[in-house]
Length: 299
Image (cartoon, rainbow, N blue to C red; front, side):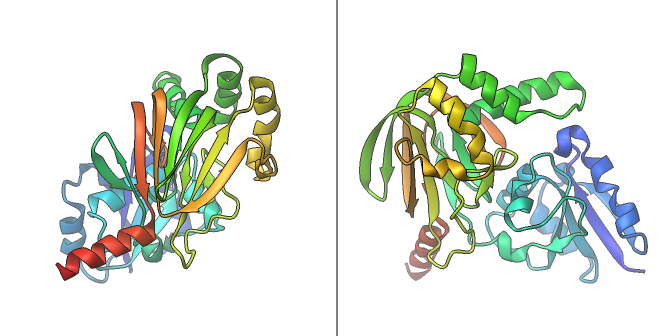
């Protein structure tokens, strides 16, 4: 009987990570499944190397679980096949590659190499989907607080966003530097950098972005200048990617490097993981990361 090591994140899926991962009991009923809490593994690379070569390894979690895994691996590709089973709540990575929750595990090695990076507060990390800065980061901040009090109930980010637009969230002016070109923006609502098309649990922020694009560039999205009423009217269209029609207030630029500086602190999210009180982030595309690795190897 085939042996499978299921590395699950108990915090995924609003704290239902193990229950979600256990759906594999029926999906893979003919295999021997060993469930291991991935958050208890101090050195994931060493742990994977210690497993027998014939053991199938499955990572079960959401976008945040993927983010932690790729960064715990140090950015290097695993020496063995890694499979993924969606057990999260947002699952934007899953959407972006055309999969649906509940499908059997699939190999993800090609998706977790050559990734872009973001630097926040002097710390550089890789990301697999997107960096959110603005009301998207605000939604993650509020969602985290609601999750602590909800005993596992799902968090409705759309509702949080609409209430934020109506009452609590205030846009700020920002400076955006894209591939060395600096632009000053007024009333910035969101300023994400997208490696995939989706973020925020289904928002299609960058419909033309492709994570496997030959040029390796990402998309920088700046929603700016619109008043509260217009923003409220246009916002629902982001779930269909139709917000891009509003070129008077939405800029989307393909780039290799970007720095976004807000005039006041705001919550930021990296693949759904929240960082509070941020005024600036810088990101490098997967192509730029490859260039830097190649240059480092020749010195």
